[in-house]
Image (cartoon, rainbow, N blue to C red; front, side, top):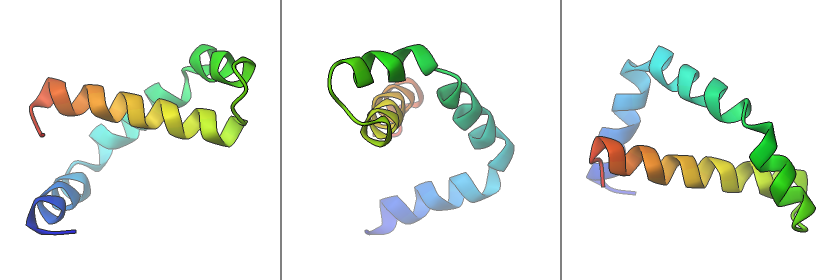
Length: 65
């Protein structure tokens, strides 16, 4: 995927606790998952969408993009 991806992957490897906390926070967002399921998505799709949306937000907040 390229050098940028490798840098991000290395960051994730060296900041494990941070990413575990982010995952726990996203996993706890059951209301959003339920809303997406009600909109017709499967649970698997809904969870992936929540991760994408949160990843985009985190990227903008940390200026990783």
